[in-house]
Image (cartoon, rainbow, N blue to C red; front, side):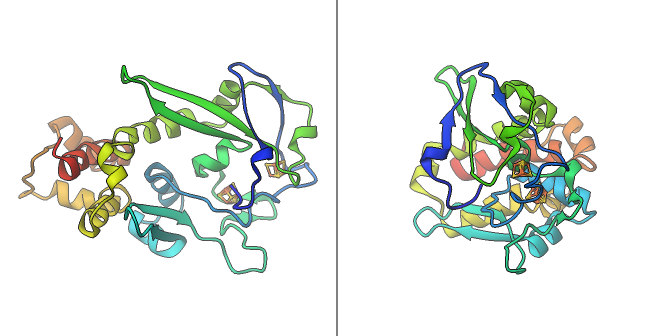
Length: 243
Ligand code: SF4
Ligand code: SF4
């Protein structure tokens, strides 16, 4: 999302509400939205993008990302760095569209919607969507109608949302409101985002910890970063909050 979006441009969608929108190579504003972004990346975004680029997560973070921590809570935020071309373009935008389209970040897939997800008191996940109507985006003049659920499905978002929802217990833990120590912030980043380093740690023969992977997880996580991420979340909850 652009930094300068105005609250008047954001509207909550009712369940099943239909909105008219399409985006394709033929729209006059093609690629206009792929610049000047504050594009926060989730751990699952990093898994997909680094795989697409045949990079380790570490190399992807070092080459493409900005890592920020707010002074008060120390919680690391990972952003995709824009390039210095006078337009602050995304490093992956090309005249033909997105170079990493098959593995583009969840926020790019969700646009022009935004999703808010939260846990209920019964531990179920609830969400709602907002519609962002930015003046540069002409996709709203296109003749295609859908509701949020249909948009989510066609954009390949269910697996992104599932991976991000798995983080909710961690991100909205009461302790996170207090913040992390610098050492905890490092562990947070290493565990969730520098996945190759965490894999090496867990798969080492002498790895012993308060939380151990099941044999099934251990055999799968060598190749599968999603399994690794799910274990990482469990491990981190114990490491940070002793749960
Ligand atoms: S990752 Fe792709 S879709 Fe997202 S901003 Fe960059 S070029 Fe656009
Ligand atoms: S229609 Fe909107 S989302 Fe599609 S390229 Fe144009 S600005 Fe971007």
